[in-house]
Image 1 (cartoon, rainbow, N blue to C red):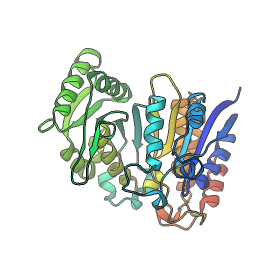
Image 2: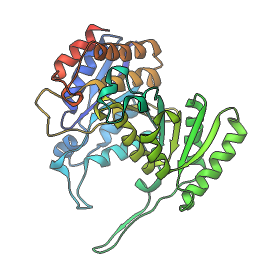
Image 3: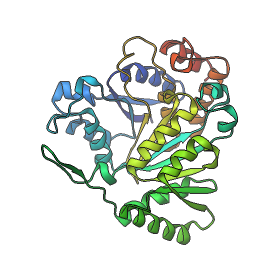
Image 4: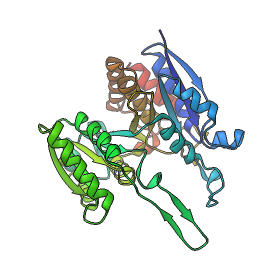
Length: 341
């Protein structure tokens, strides 16, 4: 039976990188795709970034594949105006997507594209596990003309479930990132992580790293890390920093998972409206996000490996999109990957 996938093309280059991703998926299995407007495209059509109909469709799917959202067209400081990013937050809450996984593994073919020296990144293979539905992004917000506040709040249960995800994914070590020298939420975070570790995962090494130190170590010695566990805002910042180790944010996929419902899979990069419509967008992070969907969302490990291997072989044979210093457009990159599937 075909797997039912809801696709959210979104904005900017989103539709351009999603379409070839469906070609790649059709080459490895049977899927039914159902498309819905999301983000700015949905605001233009319906006045909201996420409609009830789209959320219901996502809840009923086997997995959700999202391309990219946002753009200057919808940028505003008006707190009452709809923003594309509200759709992302609504989808995370609506699907209970509390765990965001971002693997960072520079490919040997792209070592020279990294802003860091080859010897510094060689052997890096880390996973950022970010809590996705709590913290300052979802806390109570107030705003007057000359004052604003955002509350950062976490419960023991929220911390424990994301920590369990990180320990379960780790090969040997979890680096729990917090700011326990300043923040009460981080002190609770550290206490809960320590207790869970001693009770359920004593075979995994645990270290605590303050977020500022973690940011420095990511560029000075990224191979130090195995699995990074962190809360929402710290994870947002650190995972984008880690993305640049690979040489281009256009190469990194992500998975957002819940306990039992469909997961959502999307590239880390944004909608790149400055290059939309030019046929030069790098689709590889979208392909790799589809591979994460195959693995974590549908349990299709061999198909996931096939897609990842095809991307890696295409790069070994010289494929380079403009963000990687080459001239290959979206269509050429797609052909190169399909040839190696």
